[in-house]
Image 1 (cartoon, rainbow, N blue to C red):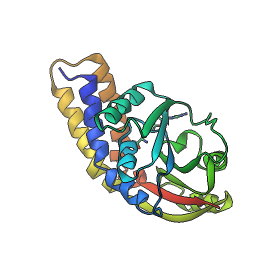
Image 2 (image 1 turned 135 degrees about the horizontal axis):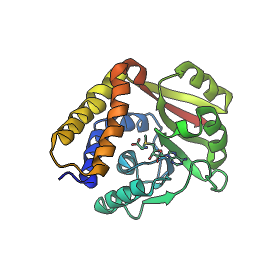
Image 3 (image 1 turned 90 degrees about the vertical axis):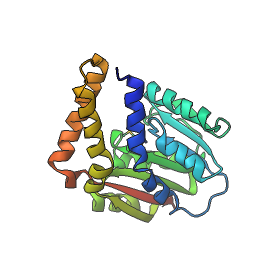
Image 4 (image 1 turned 30 degrees about the vertical axis):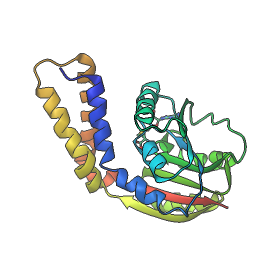
Length: 223
Ligand SMILES: C[S@@+](CC[C@H](N)C(=O)[O-])C[C@H]1O[C@@H](n2cnc3c(N)ncnc32)[C@H](O)[C@@H]1O
């Protein structure tokens, strides 16, 4: 029988299909010596671990979902990164860190929870002057988001789109095939069944209109 653990591991594998874009965004930053990075809404930490491989910095990864943080803890330990990567169960609404504490703030897929403009305003306090904010968000309202960046005390130093087709080809399409394979098995744990249903609802929305589900990376420098 499929386990929840195996289900999450498969989702992690699919998330890794898109890790090339995390790498691309990081490489748009200037060279940074041992940066202190805050990864907001780290989830199970696929981008977090990649960031740790891309630099020699210290990374603090925060999320409110403890099961995701536990999964990230396992990855940190397996990769021998316990001296440089740490997790914290903390809401992105309560980032009570000292002023100008971080060289880089990284947020993939989490800014929607607080809203783009509000995040830019509030997260600026804990970012050092000329520090970097990298956000991966929906492509929707791309031009308006670019305007908000320049109005909120940041320079946009780069951006790029990950198209809805790419998301379908590299993530949602393979996820759907996996979900169908699980559902075809005769004995399914009810917890897995509920995970499959929830994934299928998201897959169906994307499938109906993939163009609408593109995402965008915004690479910003605080003025
Ligand atoms: C789409 S996942 C992205 C995970 C990871 N950054 C990635 O790109 O694979 C969004 C994450 O944001 C987290 N999240 C949602 N609301 C949050 C909040 N108020 N504070 C902290 N994390 C939050 C969720 O728990 C989830 O792990």
